[in-house]
Length: 291
Image (cartoon, rainbow, N blue to C red; front, top):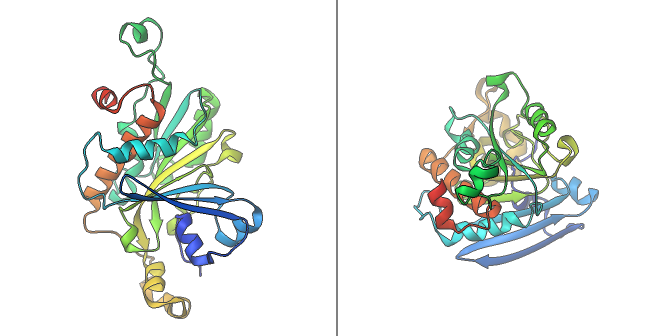
């Protein structure tokens, strides 16, 4: 059985820090610990279980703590996101997940706060002083159980229609440790597999499937109970007795008690940082006013 995590930094912890084909660096900004992990080849991909690409991890105080709309952390995270974006062109932002299930509502909640600007053009844009806005389209994909459509299929149809320069996918993640829930943010240019962290694999959303670069942004909101047991009690227990944690075959996940507050504030942090990254010709206070 595999310990489930969407975080590349945790995959490195599990696989060991000495594997080849991986570059790793750590640095601090604004009271946050950041790391940049680059998976360089197929050997490293196999060892980590993570696709080739860059994974930026931001470890910050709990998102159940409040922060201001012009917090320095927004600018720092926005700068990290901007480094992965194409310089020009339309961007498609996709909020993945189910708004009706709190730990899976991060993507839709963040998407609601991202500035959709593709329709602001011509004389209206010039007269309102918004002609400096970069074009952005925003969608909330829902989940297959609601729509009957795979998220990857849904996004691909939109990509073919509006032809963005890149897709930015926001989704809730799974961690292996409780202490990382609501305290970790991951940004990657390797795309993502919706539901992979809790064993619900769907069509991968990446450059190969979409035909354009895919940047993923997420915060872990859940821990798979088997993975948590293995992490707390050791791999020996995990591999021998994990089946006892699935009564009647039902798989369980653990969420923090403050999940409503966590998803609300995490989605706000992501949306504000994303707006700052995309609309870098405007100050953060100007963007807040537009939102």
